[in-house]
Length: 152
Image (cartoon, rainbow, N blue to C red):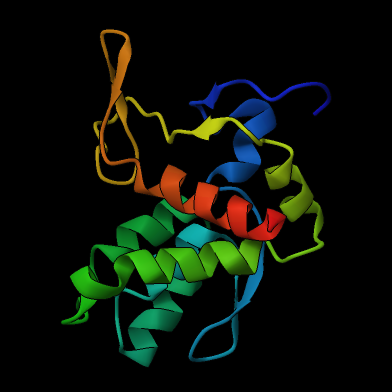
């Protein structure tokens, strides 16, 4: 990307598809030292503490299937308390300092990062209501936190 970043990036598609958890970006780590094809695989697999279920999610052939499988596993009892940390950990693994993806993320500065969507996700993203983005936008906030710490 050249020139100034836009004030807001509200679609993780096209030139900003790399910001999506569905983008191919193999990461390695976690309790079993596995390689996860995407952050979505990482996140969904960490919903469970069962090794078999964890592997089953990681082996999903694409992030959509990983998301589906994440809905089928036995949810760990502390999930609501740890899910933001799990997502942040996955983003740190994806945007490793001095990596190409880290530099691409840094190039989005100072734009607000909004996981804009049309499927109604107001927790991880936001939906456009009139001319205003409505939602908690946790993915966007965690990406911005990652970007800030990379740039520090």
